[in-house]
Image 1 (cartoon, rainbow, N blue to C red):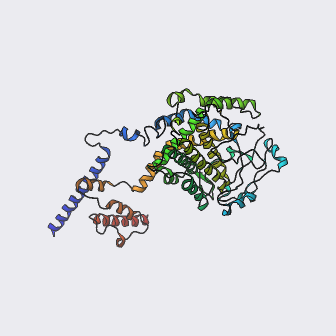
Image 2 (image 1 turned 45 degrees about the vertical axis):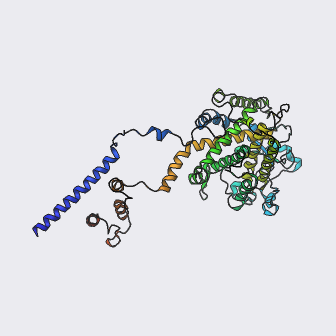
Length: 506
């Protein structure tokens, strides 16, 4: 009997010593560097961005774009779009879908838009406009937050020259069916517009009007059209994810990183297309610098109008922008060869169809930002490919006021998206990809894989932890029945029971 008890004591000491060695090894592996390593983190792995090098089909690299956007473009654009001239956008909000008239969305015209009588329409520029009633809000397709706030301040507006844009649907002329909207009161964010109606819009854009990509048969011009639409789509999704209604009961808004990752970040091409679209629109703005510098920004407020002109000049002629990225995109290499004019006409018709599809959007606020940004993209196409080109040397640039407003607001939207991706993207990818790949292995599993070949078994300590934190532990439900540490588990159960008795007697 004495020998048996001695052997048991020795086994306990051996088992205890083994556990102590394993714990010491695990602690040392966390705190001590391996041979040839230092305690400093790897600068290459930490500092090397996921997107680097030249942006495809552009003349700037990702690092330069991020730096210029942070130091120059984003701050200037944020101020510019808040001025009276760029704050107001004239738009026809009621739906008149030319593609599926039986869809039922046009029934929203009578309940979602508060139109002023024709005799009172000019006065709505000078005095506050009546907002939507609660009944008007709930009839909007999607959610009440999808309705547009039409509140205006007492600013006077001037007209602008009507000029044709071959890239957009010619349905935005100045008439009684259009109304001014304060963009600052109607931010682009989550509206609750989801489901088949929203999906139908994007399906029609990609399947019917936008060339399928990637394809070896696509020429550069067709590929660029796809990338522009994809980049715009990414930007819209980013704004929805960055300002999302997290809890409708408490009206809590915040970032939806899961949506951001699932819709944009997990597809690197969508991020690349966002950067491409940003540089494409930026090139259009810089190419139209002479026109934009001399344009009339009169709103009846001389002080603010001077500020608008000053901000425009700061944006167009910033020395950092001119030195680092003077030509963001080179449009001169497109539309070459005998088929150039025919190809341009084909892509123009495709983009016009896309602009007309914005009338089919069932959410009023989504329709507002969809029309503005598609018009802005169409204005960029007009600047780069319609005037001042080699085939139109004698043609002068003429832009409508609405086109200038849409162009600069679109550039600001893209700038915000690039900023958000640069600041939030890496951490979001780490969080989401960590959840997908599962938790890091425990020290027991790391020791196993370093000693033996093949995957490590389930960590016994994780099972022990799960058991100890369970509500009603019992020996019958112990997860460690087939584990070498079963005796430790039993001993811990006994000690826990003893502690409970002592506590109960206190």
